[in-house]
Image (cartoon, rainbow, N blue to C red; front, side):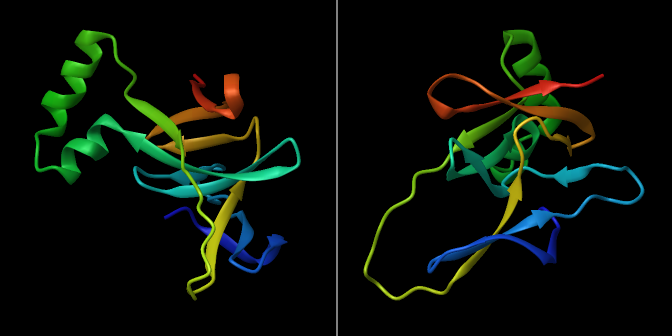
Length: 131
């Protein structure tokens, strides 16, 4: 889970609250992992995203992460990505959720690699590796 700073609320809605991400004092970056959810503001609207990786997917499905990573590289596939998550409206009572808010252009440390969150077509996010 992306560490959040409970003292720095970005937005509060009936269904969820968004807090600013906490920067790791050692690395100087926000640290993300496969499966971490976050909110990002695009055109004055918050949207929910999920970090994903070949290694994380392989581990979740009891596959060899080394084999999966090497196969993805050999096939020219992305090894790290961000997926937009759908949001549904319901009248069922649910516990209020808490999310971490990230910013467009922010650099995150994701499984040992630095990536910049960059906007692409249709309000999607691309991870651009920073060397």
